[in-house]
Image 1 (cartoon, rainbow, N blue to C red):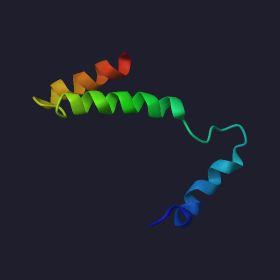
Image 2 (image 1 turned 45 degrees about the vertical axis):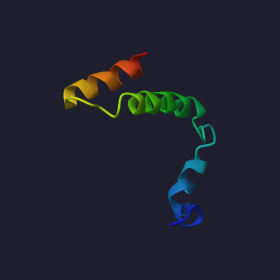
Image 3 (image 1 turned 90 degrees about the horizontal axis):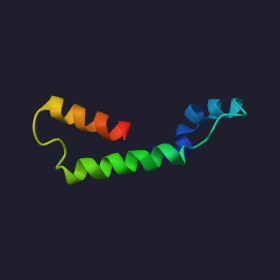
Length: 60
């Protein structure tokens, strides 16, 4: 399904005039976390170790 077909899902957000449309700052943070996860071979080890790593990266 292309973006034009999903129009009805996005149209409600334009009722809020002061709302942000995109979040470049969040995208930058998520890109750095994704890069760190890739470099660590995507949670090699236990699930708890992976959760702690992502939490630590988010806090940084």
